[in-house]
Length: 132
Image (cartoon, rainbow, N blue to C red):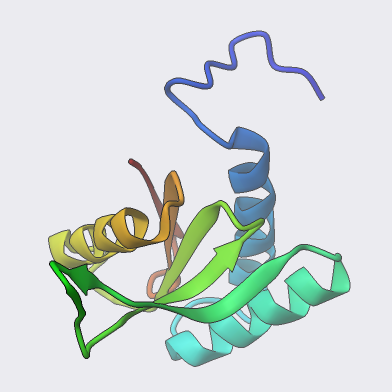
């Protein structure tokens, strides 16, 4: 599929993010909104596995500070295609500023260029994309 208006500067990794969002829409339809985050994570793991999509669930990132590695780590919900951070939320109030900040931190320490935040907490799905 070709998109003449595709601008990789404004929408990096568009094919990859479109694929992830497609599965998010499917998951939002079945079982629907309002469950705990863990259900949606399990559903993504099922879809990625069934469709031979490369992913790593709950990848941990160590943080280097000067000459030491700090004891606390960041843990991204998913790294998909080894290039996209996927964060799953199930919040009634929508995606908050701290969710965006969390995803930006994951991008900084992972080397990934794009982060997606999908919120399954409401009837209308919410998707935020962050590029770094």
